[in-house]
Image (cartoon, rainbow, N blue to C red):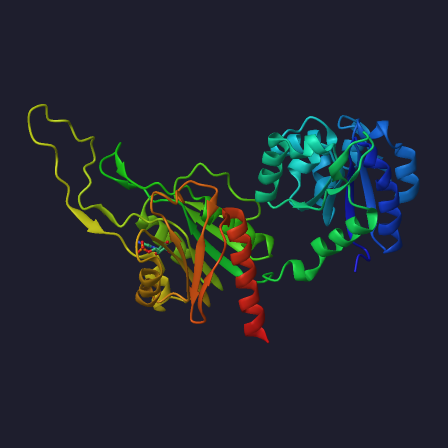
Amino acid sequence: MLQDKRILLIVGGGIAAFKALELIRRLRERGAHVRCVLTQAGAQFVTALSLQSLSEDKVYTDMFSLTDESEMGHIQLSRQADLLVVVPATANLMARMASGMADDLASTVLLATDKKVLIVPAMNVRMWTHAATQANLATLKARGVEVVGPVEGAMACNEFGLGRMVEPNDIVAAIEAALSPQARPLAGRRAIVTSGPTREAIDPVRYISNQSSGKQGHAIAAALARLGAETILVSGPVSQPDPVGVRMVKINTAQEMLAATLAALPADIAVCAAAVADWRVAQRPNAKIKKALYGPPPRFELVANPDILATISKGDVARPKLIVGFAAETEAMLDNAQAKRKRKGCDWIVANDVSPAMGTFGSDSNTVHLLSDAGIESWPTMTKVAVAEQLAQRIAQHFQQAAE
Ligand code: C5P
């Protein structure tokens, strides 16, 4: 299964770097092509010559080698592979990846790539459990980076704990999983996700909006893209980074969100996670409304915004095969969500409790229930990234079962 796959191995600077040598052997035995990038720190632990002998390919070490750049630019290097594997991923390399640095060949290649990245962390237990490393790990995972390990064990620094790199055979298994077609069960499917709030102008400088952060919708788009779906993310104004591998359509108003969603059809999957403003101001003046010093405050007539979820579910348009809505409720959550599913005509509803005590808006975690024809499934509280992952897996299962 690894026959003719191209692996770009980035060898970081840790004592576990020596395991990269055995990994190359295992990969070569399976017919994979391995090309190595050796960091300056990595070169303290393994030599370019050993990597070159085992990989039977040139080893890239210097970002500013003009010969290398003319033969194989760093962009090309990062794009020609099927998978990038960082072995070992040190705390420093993870931090540099998370902050998007590009100050050596390895970090530049990692920033320039459009391919999947697997990291294999190895470090001292305290470095691994440090809040900084854990925050970097969460950032990398949210961007779709795959991670294998670390495991618990004895370390070179004479400490014991979580931080030891997994063995080469486990890395091979993780590489196979990352490259297997099952890892992309939604390949060939098209998905539209709406996310974030909408902004409805009152005048050229003021607007009505809501607290939606876009975290859940963006994470869903990223998760669907990771499973291979061609994903279009229609988003209102948020401060979330654009997820990797999705096509962004940025809008402001509900009307623009509807138009962008309809323009993105046909699709197999639609997930409406946006918190669309229910109303907009009927007549919007072209100039800023003046504050009358002694007069009454202005009054606005509101009109209802189009319901995007209901519109695409109705089926006058090319109806996506599976439509998932969200229901943010503060009371009688499940009853209201079930009624909403029927009323809007979508297939599934993800219901969550947004009463102030739950703090879902803007928070990193979510407690949701999945409502479908099959009944109600209550999921444990988990991060929004994990909710997105599980939802995307459920969507993939749905299509697999429908195909059987
Ligand atoms: O009616 P309510 O806003 O509670 O419905 C929530 C669900 O409907 C979410 O999936 C949301 O994205 C979607 N929705 C929509 N267009 C609207 C209002 C809600 O797509 N105008």
